[in-house]
Image (cartoon, rainbow, N blue to C red; front, side, top):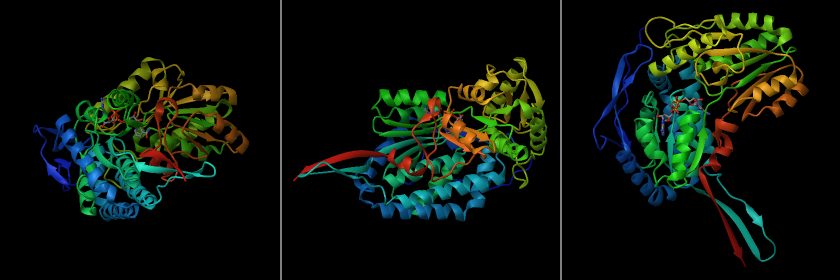
Length: 484
Ligand code: NAD
């Protein structure tokens, strides 16, 4: 498969607005999941590099950044958003090369959402304010929303640039400085983002980027005594490790955006064509490598056969192929490790007695492409129905009535998202209120708005990304009481 030759970003560590070598010089490989070829070598950081970055971020926070007004921080965010937009074609190409996602999505979703998020928080930067709280005659009390300090970001490979922007925006609006680690599978757009941060005029030390592995760099961030908060997006298993490390070190605050196994419920009165389009997008967007993927599709028994026929026809239409072809809708999975994991889940599903209704195989013989896959005859207790596969694999599950489907939909350790398709708005609201999930979508799916909070119930996470709610998570709230 042909991929374009494009310039690569600086691949060293980014500390204090300088590109530097690790304390112990080492590199790791960036591999394109489209070609399985090495793209470049990237400097691999370690705990000593995190330590250097934290010192710089602390010094900047104490002596420089706190003197910037909200309006000045907002202006820098606007500038950064403009720089991203000026180079959106290039950044989208870089993301697809590193991650394997279709260029149409890198461009139209990842890069677009990144600059939009920065603009949204640019508008907030001079509006981070506390409240005046009446205490009675002779007393005045008010709250101050102060920046929490130095924050650590640990981010995943499914939306590498966008999730970094989701965290960068509110952290900067609140007035924090940052030490970030992208996923070792997809570091390239984060490295380019660092170049743009410097170009936008952010002072040295505000943003520092240390590439490398979770067990070294990630662990050093979550356990560092000089970091006041860690914001993590990734698997529930890693989230628990990070929370334990945060607690055992300095009890740093955590925001955890974790995994999901989201139910999507199609009632018998739904517009079946429309619901099938929604269910397809819910599952196969980003090749199912989406924490909100509607991977448990509950379909009311009376329409099961008809819906399955319509849904299958729509999934068959998905165009799989070279991510650089603008008409491609399904690219490759992000890495070999992940490809092997998804294929092992498909095999597990077969072993446990589920039926492959569509797909189930590798596409082509180069690159980590997996066919959109539909499993039928699935039991709720099967591994493929309980665990997050994070690939293009859906379980279709018939149900009889509302009580039954609610019980089964909520019978999961996760609680990130859920969908409901019906023309009966009373039913939709009744079910929506009872679903234990951080986002519930009615007659639509994947509607993640920058303005609205996003984050999970149960083991899908703690805290919120996006919206006004995310900013408060980067603040320390102080109460000042005055007697007069
Ligand atoms: P992952 O947990 O394997 O890795 C995420 C990040 O954590 C990477 O940067 C990794 O290097 C780092 N890491 C790994 N071990 C670590 C450790 N011991 N200490 C500190 N850091 C460590 O997740 P992934 O495979 O990159 O991403 C997929 C997961 O992310 C899925 O479970 C998905 O649901 C979840 N996700 C959640 C959201 C959300 O907003 N809720 C969004 C996207 C992805």
